[in-house]
Image (cartoon, rainbow, N blue to C red; front, side):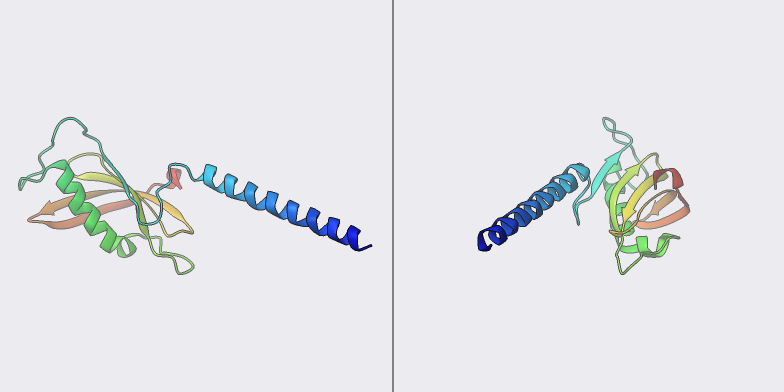
Length: 137
C-alpha cells in the first residue's frame, strides 16, 4: 500500500516537471526576437546615407532625441492608456522620413503601434497626427 502511494507521487511529480519544462520551452520559443523589459529595438529607414534634419541633427541623433522624448511622454501621447497597472515601454521606433516615424509599445498586457509626424526645433520635440495602427495590434 505504501509502495503504491510512493509510485503514485513519483508519477504526479514527473507529470508536473514535464508540464513545467514544456511551458518554459513554449514561452521561450514564442518570445524569440521580442525585446526584454527595458530593451529597445530601433532602426531607421535610411541605413547607408546620413539624412540631415536641420540644426545639424543626423538620423541617429534625431532618433535618440525622439526616443528620449517618447520614453518620457508615451503615456500622455497614446490615446490608449495602460491597463492593470502596467507602464508603457517602447519596443520599436522606426524613423521613416525626415518628419514621420512609427512606434511599437507595450505595457506588458497590451501591445500597440502608431504612426506620427514630428518636428524637432532647437531640441524641442513636437508630435502631431499620432494615429494608431490597428493592423499591427
